[in-house]
Image (cartoon, rainbow, N blue to C red; front, side, top):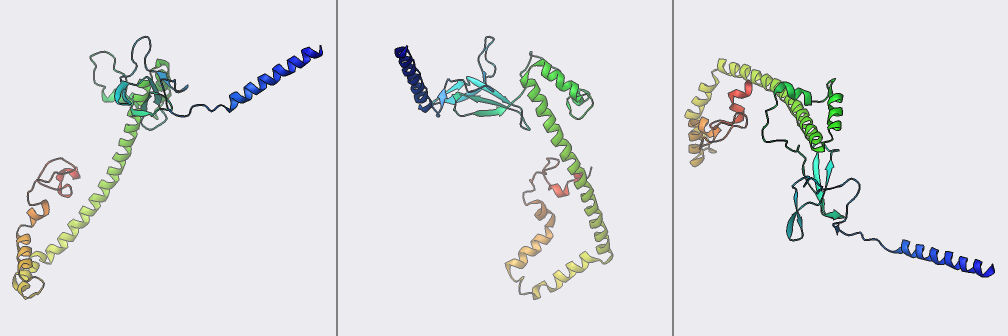
Length: 247
């Protein structure tokens, strides 16, 4: 009995030493290509085929990513790809996987079904989860994010348009006051009669100023008259002179 207890104690001691040694053995922390990255990742190759044709670098070669994941917790969902645990994670926008060769454009009425904040939004979200297509769910989220940003920009444009109209009205009233004082004729008359008496506008500087006054419209729009308007996209005028901006 004594020998048996001594042997059992030595066996337990040996197991404890082995466990302690195993705990002290450092685990690899560097990149491990081919090793499954974790629970949030999926194998990009299944029985049906490749889930996503996402090409990423692998050393000196480009390969289809062996592991992929979906990030739906950002404003614009992303598709993530990597070669293994601890390897570089690559990303690109997540878009819905196409179904079939032909499709019909979504009408404005059907687009309302994809917006958020409506009474039926919860029902649409339930249908997306029941469909079990992460790419479709991500695409709807992508559409909603852009729809929200477009609404915000439209409201800002409306506020700015009202401010622009106020400034144009003030300009019109001021120009009307200037017209009643015959401002343009009086200014031109003073320039033509007394410019030569100013030491500042002697020589080339005075000549350039006179030419700029004569060609002031061309000077304002650019000598080549080929600037593109940032609002209507046409050439020949700047955005502040675009008549479409007032629509």
